Length: 100
Length: 100
Length: 100
Length: 100
Image (cartoon, rainbow over all chains, first blue to last red; front, side):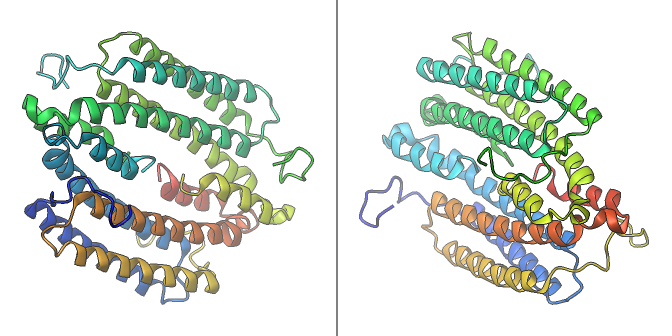
């Protein structure tokens, strides 16, 4: 989205408790990525062990996304008709969700 | 959901034009599945050819789901706060979306 | 892939028992798609009920794909080095698997 | 897998060039996660902007996984029949791949 296009809901922020939860999860994810980097320092690391770790990080990221998505639906999407920005909010959400 | 639990929005139906579009897509998907079944009648069918067809059906199903999801967001989710069923509508939607 | 390009393993077919299992699953999937089509004949069908059915078909398709993939790995990929077609067989498999 | 079970291919390591490429990608992913953490320090961050960043990290992780998977298929799976560990190598690979 270009910087000067009108953006739906740019005054609508992530709920504080959700933001804290997401930060804690992302710090854990960063630690997990660090762990995979250390694992890959060893020259005998086995492919499937690395793939399992990547899959685990992927699952943790998906849960973080679900947390933010749930908050967005509850706090911003369910009120969009009242604000009158439902077309914009649905369009940008589908853009993030499609084919996930 | 148990049959006698109150359901959010049970009076809220899929929009007619979306329903027609989804039906057309699902008839095409059924035809595609029939095509894979015919392909699998041959005893020399190659695994990767079958996997490609399954992937194509999967993509067509995902697009059909996205179509219905977009309509649900626009017609039912963005108005949930006004109706007062936002908790129920978000819970059931997350149940369908999570980890897609 | 163009019809006259050399194809890896085109003489390698899906194992008979796997083919039978995949056909049974695809017939069930076709029945499930028919069920969604009947559901969509009703003008009061609720979006989330349709999305749940699409998700279920998606899961059934994924299991069918996994079945064929497992057979392909076992019967064709693990023997590719002996046949000398490992580059081709890995390239076409990654093409189907990537971003699944 | 229990620690004392025989593991397929435990002497088979990720190819050096692939390991270097995966490390570079994971360092970039870690930087991206740091970027999302900084973004979430701001109390006016918008949900969809965070979701877009999470989706981007997800895509980068998937590409890293595909890179390692391609190497595993080429260097370890296509030679499994010659080594005689094809059942074990297929079982553990399907465990990582299924439903991805």
